[in-house]
Image: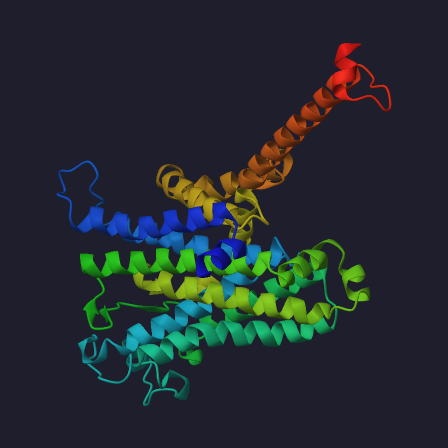
Length: 397
């Protein structure tokens, strides 16, 4: 019964993709830890956190697709939720350093000692505990999204105005976190992490585990997003996207529909940020930059918004291309990114996955039309039957 309900709640292709991601979660660490470096299938140590970063970006793009692809909310501030989740994890990792820092202070991080802070700020309390930090990874982005959405959606701010406000929000956070007085490391941010849950963060086994955790989180988030979008609530989401006024006239509380999905999406982005930080090794205010949120929009558009699978593919492909392109022509990357977005808008408006799905749908409709036409021709070619006669009588005639 559970299997039947599970398959009903998700599309078959979504289950297959989630299964492939789970396979990758175990295949990459195995190829890194178990295979000899001379083996052509061996995954080098430096490649494991890079692939993990791609998957955390994919989780962020999936979070944006929930609000943009299915609810029509073009958020240009999802980078803020990603960064807040990253800072929550970074604060936990900083507390784990203890007396091993440069200044050997068992309580204060190095940057606080350097700035002559005398005591730990109250909002740093509790971050020496991983469960507390994990709770903050969800709570802080979720609370910000809830408060922001409460005022924005109940004021019926929509369209480009909402997009601009979300971008203003992330820019305001960028300026705030740049200040040393905020107590988050200022321009340098949080870095020089030592371990996580008692394990050396630079060890190959830890990096492989972090990669596996990121892949598993992405697979679970994909299944959750699929369950949401295929439910009755998901149909209302699409209704809000396509005809908000009509959905409201039907009796639905549109602002509540938007608020729920916006909060869930922000929490998913926070998880992506928390998984990103220990693999990259740093979190600074640059993650709040509005350009980062715009990049997430491009990943989603390239892959295909409103498809769930598309943003995952788009995030991985674009960031893989970025790694290659910036190594050869770093100064031209932004131009290439802009050209990619323009090309996608002009030639692939539905993105990679959306265009493929449209092609299959068109081919299917052609086949159905051809089958129907063939049936009409065969029916017209058959002799007309005389009413009241049996088929045997027709044959005798």
